[in-house]
Amino acid sequence: MSDTDLNRVPDGGTLRVLASGLEIVRRKKHEWSNHLTRLTPEELKRKTNKVWGSKFLAFWTLEALVDRIEREVTTARWSDSAQEPSPLDIVDVHEIGLASGESVHTIRIVCDGRYIHAYPIED
Amino acid sequence: MSDPIDLPIDSEDRLYDPPLVDCAYRDPQRRGFAITFVPSDDVSSAATEFVLVPDPSPEFTQIEALWAHVAQLLNPSAALDRVVHGGGGDYSILLTDRSRLNLADSDNAAEISDRLKRIADLAEIAFRIERRRSRPSPKIA
Image (cartoon, rainbow over the protein chains, first blue to last red):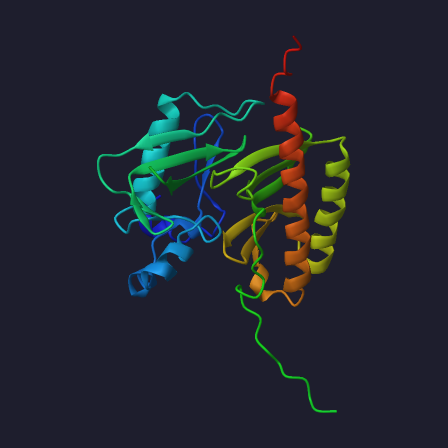
């Protein structure tokens, strides 16, 4: 699917089904929104905390994010087994997002046994 | 008596402190509720934690009843597939017929938020129990 098509997937909907059977799902609460640029530092800290969701920077299109997640979990050999895999923390050389108002470099990929998603975490 | 004031209810009004449901669904293969939740600070510093609430367990029975109540309040066109947190007090409810509901669009948003909060509380209790079990017992000298 192109990025245009991926943007039509609803929040929580499946972006890609992997060969392993696991599904990468969309989580809008971690996506960039331009209104974040208009917030005060205090508001930005709150709107990127764990209740509102840390945010990927704008250059992370859904297609780029899905490709990266697929690459990482394939390398880690995640599968649709009875035991959910431990989270993967990927440290990038570049800033990838905001968590509690701070610029961060680490992507956490989590799986609950069937669904996979990712979000920025504090370094 | 004056007319009631029709105050808008937005996601800020439905905002609870953690624990909060991040994603929840019933998993028949693993016989339980698979629940990712935003934990309380005193339980975990992580952004989310995961617990499979097994059937049978006291927490499973209570979550099953709350899940059924959420479905009843939503009166959806199909069975609930999963509930996904949209940030703050927002939730999306995905149905087995691939349609989707927004909590904000429901007339019963406040009641449903309350049930989801109770599901998160139970998930966190189950998580604490599981974590205590998986820790090695202290050695007696």
